Image 1 (cartoon, helix red, strand yellow):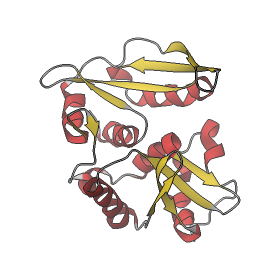
Image 2 (cartoon, rainbow, N blue to C red):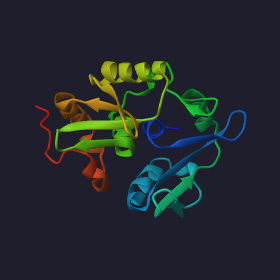
Image 3 (tube, helix red, strand yellow):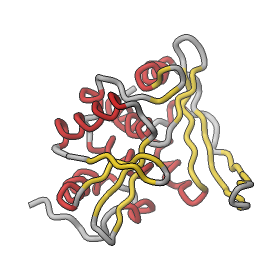
Amino acid sequence: MTKKQKDVLIGMILGDAYLQKTGEKNSRLRLEHTTNQKEYLEWKVNYLKNYFQNKAQDITRFNPVWKKTYNYVRIQSYSSPEFGKFQRLFYSQSKKIIPDTISTLLKSPISIAVWFMDDGYYYHRDNMAYIYIPNYDKQSLQYLMDALRSNFDLTAALKKKSKGLVLTFNVNETKKLMEIISEYVIPSMKYKISLNPVSTE
């Protein structure tokens, strides 16, 4: 696996990707997005195309609570010991965690960009960015925020929302975040970032 592939994979794992254990040392990567994000899924797959054989499948789900039907696209990689290494790093008893080595792993802007395209949102009303995160344990959260600060000079605050935990970036931190990720955000996902170009001067 190349360095660029690893950088993109790290962003996926922090975001929506799921690594399924398939043996003592192997795992497979599962990607799933709503149908209107199919281009984004294909962009991800293209980075790791040597790990995929099948095409994305269309999936329809009915939510009995909201009484609505949702359409998705899903693709799974073949099983690989390289994915197995990341599964052991980022999962504990099938629950996603942040490893204590995250500061040595999360160093590339493209990792942050993929993570943000998966789980981030820019709120135009207050010019602030948010990244929704799982209910990590307290230590995982500290590792993650320390990595953002030490590697990207990004300071995030942790808040609880109705849908779960979010990392919030104030106006100044959001500007820095946009500078870091904007060149990597693909056209179909531009709606997630500030519409105003950020000066890097």
